[in-house]
Image (tube, rainbow, N blue to C red):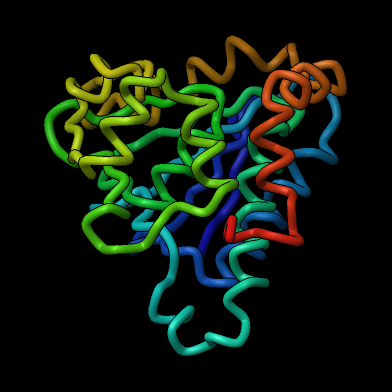
Length: 224
């Protein structure tokens, strides 16, 4: 389960050491950690990271198929997490040390910056291959955070991007050695810690207003 630590002005949220799929309990734990970050005073920033082979493998499809009657509420909770992170009043950096797939990739896009391991691991939106269309909110998030050409390729072809390819496509901001991923993310976050506050939330909210509207449309979360 996710755990929150603090290194001076930088909160480090470790998403876990498994596939870090979006089980409802996992989502609740992440939101609890974000509560702590938001309630803290003074300069602060957030790094999300993970331990092991995966940053996040996305939605917990086993749970979804076992709780079909809760599918819509589940998607709403995922959208709410994306929207919350996208507008968090601190600078956020995703440290992608391992595979970052599907909703996990979208979670990374909700951060301000991304640092990815250069030599191993993939960033991928596999929905076209697994026959699960993006919700309207998810589409809006991806298209708000990626250049049109990169968004089109990632969404339509389900391409698996290694670190250097992800950097070239503008999906991540840095591709570094494995042992430098988390340290680089913390360094980037620390440099921006003084910008935490309501002004930053307002800037983000206005910058991404259309994507946020789609993510927060609980009346039609699947975009039917």
